[in-house]
Image 1: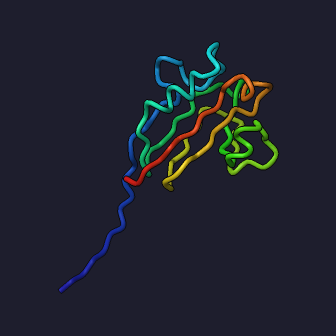
Image 2 (image 1 turned 90 degrees about the vertical axis):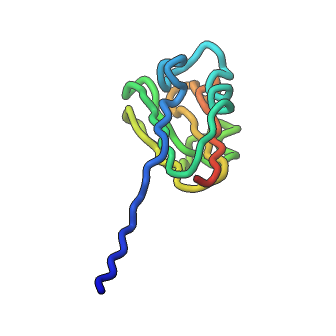
Length: 118
């Protein structure tokens, strides 16, 4: 008798952040655009957020909730200055994302991904 165990990690759905309607991760004229987009999604663990942006024009950081509200980039959980980039949602709960370039976060280039278990 041979016993074999395999551990398989299954990637979830890939989300283009902002969807095609926002054209990827870039500053929008509506400061609520990303919050509204995120509220329409049903993120689950193992899903992937694809931030499509041009290096130098935008960036993305996952931050703690307090930093999200203050647009504080001093102590990010993860910072990706070059684009495009992908973040895999590994844990359930709220994940906070902001742009760290210029005043983009203050102008609405941020959102919360509320993640449920897959």
